[in-house]
Image 1 (cartoon, helix red, strand yellow):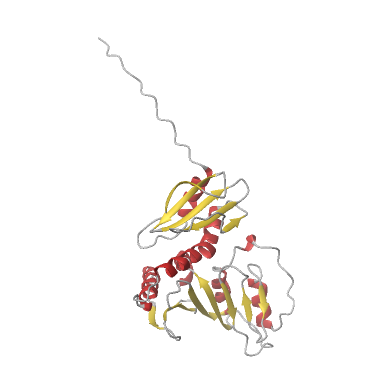
Image 2 (cartoon, helix red, strand yellow):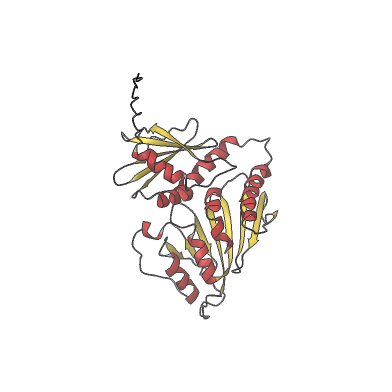
Length: 289
């Protein structure tokens, strides 16, 4: 006797919106913080009829909307529902989106979150020491030996390390501000490469402008290199300002002798500001070279 069988139809495949699919790829490129990864779920953004994605990590939330020709990203906190994107990117590549999220979006989110949690009874050093400890653990995992010390300014703390290429990095946090100040000093060629980790993608900005008003051999060489990534302008003291109106920005100290010959080993110093901890963690392996 043959027992009749019943064929159970397969469950329909789950349809994933383009925004969720893109958000999952972007989330995979963002650093894990305190053993917590980014989680992605569907969402409806106020500013778009397109299906959106919501990315969350330890109370931090990003909203991503993928369009046919661009990507919108906004940050969200309790009581702060974005009605428009905080960043509008003219591309759909996950690597480039993650880079700009790290440079522009997460530092703004962290700054607002720090302002909300700041209280008069909270020790000023507590938050910054926790963040520097997190950076220090990441560098130790890469076989470096960072040193922590009290910062040069009041209410500041610093973490520093050296690399085989001769670069010295110093990461400083002031007060309860979660944005890092990063000092980079060492051989010119190595410092040129290091600074670009904090600048926009080379292909993401307007065409290069001719060097105007930049004098001195060292200043012109640095301006030519960093000018491929961000606006560069020479200041009255001969130093260079690096960066535009948004994202990390910096200052390159002037040469002692503007007419001196410039070599790859010429010692230079650069201070970068407005760098989020997530961005530092994402390029940690690059900062060991």
